[in-house]
Image (cartoon, rainbow over all chains, first blue to last red; front, side, top):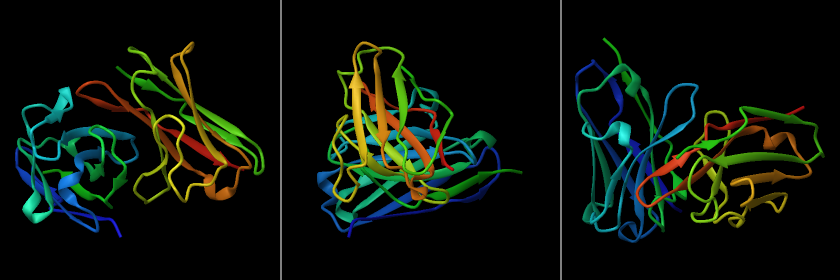
Length: 118
Length: 109
């Protein structure tokens, strides 16, 4: 069974940093491009970032460039998202999602909630 | 580019509903469109990929299409069931970005 399990969310003060993780199982992680997508409370889906199989290609949403860093460790079957200088409008559920093709997420994790508040 | 969906649609059980997704720039036919279903409290799941392909397990009541003349994609759900009530998102991409539509809330009443 394909499983993606996000972790690392929580309550953070504005200006703080957070590292989200996504543990993958049930498929050959290194064969799949991976994505982070977020969803603010009551809002729609917003693409954050995509990383290719071997980390050769990395893409970010233009509005988020500079504060977000995506990475992966194929040996550990894990995906990461480092978020710096957190703002209130970063409050969202952050999903990791995998797909055979870059920029086409197929299956999703359950998400981890990040709340930015003082 | 942007993908524009109607905020909401509603229809009765057993009927057919179509949700549109219009691409603002670039040709709709140049990059595949995917559709996701998101039920309350759950993660999105793929119901259509590559414009009109259904993953295994998705009923054939779900179908997708694209229309180059209107630069849009459509998700059609026939024989509506109450379990189809959910938010639906279209998604597409270009060379180095992906975009989600704003989502359409389907009410089956």
